[in-house]
Image (cartoon, rainbow over all chains, first blue to last red; front, side, top):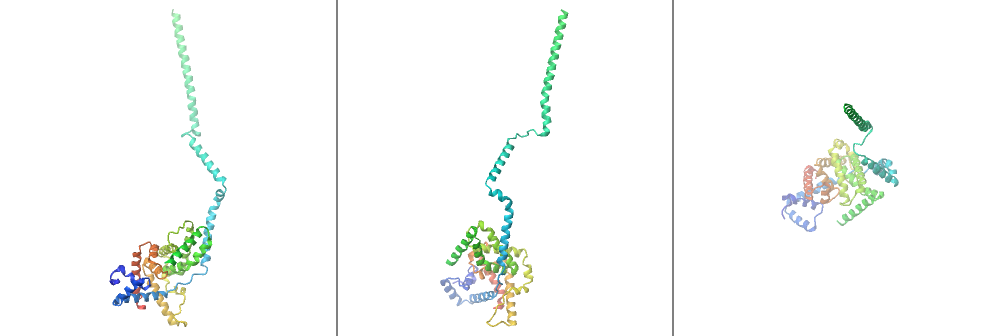
Length: 164
Length: 193
């Protein structure tokens, strides 16, 4: 067996040996190697001593009110969500309202789509009225011109008759 | 391994019950994992009050995620992933500054351990506390990821594969992290052997 300490990727086998995670076959192979490898023996002894020292480091017990504080936070969180959702709850609960709201939205959207682009709005009404008056004025002007033309034609024919 | 598989099923099953609105199952999960999460965070942060505060956040996040929970990984992997994430963030935010400054004073948190059947003498207690402080300082001096890997390996007895999932790295990276971390600790604490 090649010394595990000579190959960094294999060195973990010594830690696994210390935690008894190696199977019996690999344990036996490593133990045979360690019989004549002082470096590996030293590694295992030091690693075990380290773990023993680390065992002394006990964490303090969890506070007695840990659960109470946690549940209070959970409760507070649930309450906040309920408070936020409260105004929308009646809308969500009553089945008729969502349908009515959807219908209103559809009607409103329909009205918006139906309106032609640039449709007259209040200030443009005066302009439209001016535009509707103008043809009448033109018509009157044409009538007047026709009358004048007839009149001049009539005057001219009357003058020719008087010459004769 | 069979036991681990059974534990996976049981914890995941409990969490699925929490998802369905069973608050009592959340209580069972809390009872089962409360100590390990608090202790892991305590050893990471080295301040009891901050560790408990972070542990509360861990369980609160578990509760918040109940509706989207899917048992894709072992429950404890997920739990320690949240805990490690919060601990690393807290360390980076300098939330533990107070604990680092008060490392000596903080020993009042520690349970008094008897070194023999008889009550320890003042001298024995002082030696014990000095050794303990050295261990804590040595672990606190490790890079964050090495520290998390050592704590999960030594105190939570997690498999390499699980530590790898918690730290989001490969198994070989975990082995390398652990080897370097233990090497540093052995060198620092060699005189204690």
